[in-house]
Picture 1 (cartoon, rainbow, N blue to C red):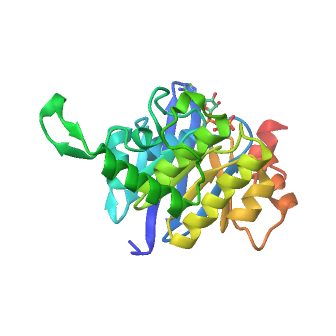
Picture 2 (picture 1 turned 120 degrees about the horizontal axis):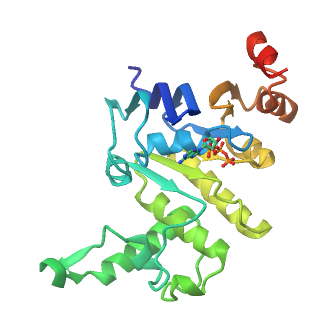
Length: 259
Ligand SMILES: Nc1ncnc2c1ncn2[C@@H]1O[C@H](COP(=O)(O)OP(=O)(O)OP(=O)(O)O)[C@@H](O)[C@H]1O
């Protein structure tokens, strides 16, 4: 396989009983590339993400990541391999402060005494500050518990967490769907920062303005299939909408079937 390719899927398919949510998806992501995954509601975008991140087991197909064929049995395995995922509904611990949330599940240990281990809070705080600086996330007070933060601030913590640990790939599924204008801009800046650092990204988004602002390539899903893979510089919003709705990229047989 071309060593420039970070992630590749071939014939990736997921059926839920008789429902063909994802069918034969061939997808490639290259080093440093930012790709948007777009499509109508129910087109199969999130299903595609879940098969890559080990959240579900695929029906068939192959996945290669970082030069190896992979079959993650759970999300932790994908994370350990270097894939960080940010979902719209966040997995943050309400009662904990920002550093503790950033290090949830991978705490820095000062003395390893099993369940009585002593956490290295200073090292965690320092790493948190570095991570936030690197990702451009501004959080006034790191000691405040997540419960007292706005939706946007929480989302920024989740994104900072993935950006801090992301070694090889970040996947964001609708990261700004629930955010206000300012918070959306902050998340978009983090994404630009990741691009500068050369960290590849898959961004699932319904926001075409955002997509054109941020990514190199746009992959359109329609009825569980990849309908197009477009260079963002060579197309406009009308082209993308035409693929999303099936005006373009639909075979004659499919048009006839749905006529
Ligand atoms: N766990 C599941 N069990 C059964 N059907 C499912 C399951 N998850 C998704 N589906 C179905 O699979 C299809 C694809 O759903 P998916 O969530 O991947 O779409 P999507 O493109 O992410 O849509 P949205 O933009 O609305 O999030 C839909 O018809 C959905 O109802």
